[in-house]
Length: 163
Image (cartoon, rainbow, N blue to C red; front, side):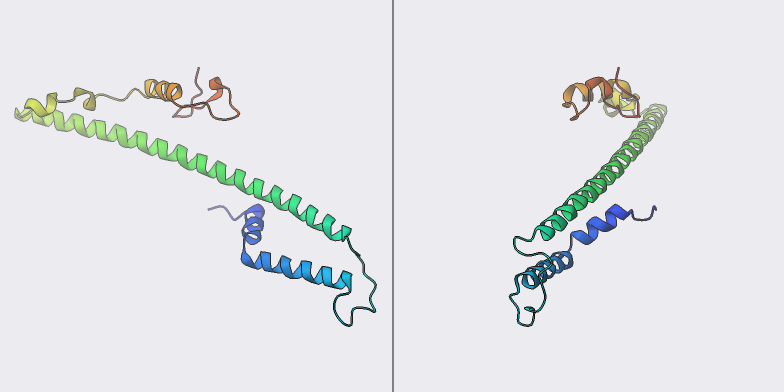
């Protein structure tokens, strides 16, 4: 497994109660020190007097960078989810092929033993291979286009682009 990315660590840390409490303490101390509300602070000159322009700039920059890190993390999670979905599709296609092969063997055994009867004639499509291209084109017709893509750019199961 890949080591955790910096963006994931930043967003994981930013999404905690500790992060929120630390910011609450930081803002409180900043405002108290620069407003001279506490005793003993009168002798210090405020470095960011009301309306706290420096604090506003620092918080704005922090928000910008946190949002960028969150977007990076979300993009990584999206790519990971797409890879998992592709792997799931491949596994499901293999399982379908194995099920079809198993049904063919059972069908052949039943015919060889002469016990095929009604059960083997019930749904002959079960022993036929699934036409993946036909299934993919039916899915493309039934599902709405993905946001930001042209219908011809939509990927099909198996990694092929639609015509």
